[in-house]
Image (cartoon, rainbow, N blue to C red):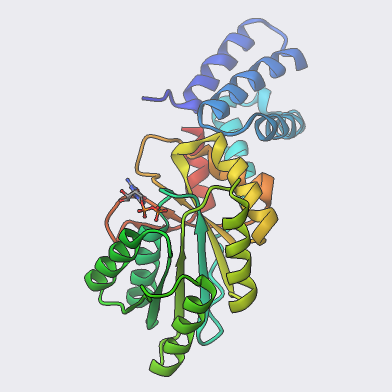
Length: 295
Ligand code: GDP
């Protein structure tokens, strides 16, 4: 579907070489091409511009232009730079505390409940943890049902309190239950909220203040492009989250939101969702995402 950027660049450089002398202006033209590729991958304009400016400097310094395959060399340079910008290495969860408390936040439909189930499954099967899920959405009984179904599927208990309209109390009850039963991770699935909904934002701030989570993971749909970046900014300003989860990367998005979000909020991306099934969760690898963004 997308043309390989490395080939595209090799072609562009061939044209440039045909012109005899390669000047900074030629390089600027090539950078325009790269910027376009990044924008096509949903990287926001400002991030794409800063990135190409940096790469341009480096490319000139490294004599990319006189090499045999400048396209490949430049692509490698960009790959390294993108990888670095997205954190360089994988960012682990802080699971030292017992119980470790993890708060899940994000917009409605982002994939929070699905991720809550996936995370519990991952912690149980890969990390030997004993998680408890807390259904902390007091607005949509269907969301509670959904979490209970997932819990059953993966064999992880779910705490819910259908009588209560107090998310802070429900979260506290869940944590108390986990302590009582020796569960060492509590994952709190909160209600989906619109970033502009003040009352809902205050509510999740109150839950945060009450339970002092070790991790606050912001779940965002990678298909929403630029909106993903704006939402991330609003949630980070309010919650100072500890990591990002990018969902729906099994779709045809190139995943540029990963780079934009990292550069705007400067928080690590910790996981990616790659499908609806409970196993469709991967730890985020910056180098793999860099290759994907560059196509
Ligand atoms: P919530 O409102 O944020 O809790 O979102 P849900 O967890 O209910 O997810 C909304 C929809 O997105 C559901 O149909 C999920 O099956 C789907 N979904 C969640 N994560 C992924 C993913 O990584 N890939 C795909 N293809 N679908 C996903």
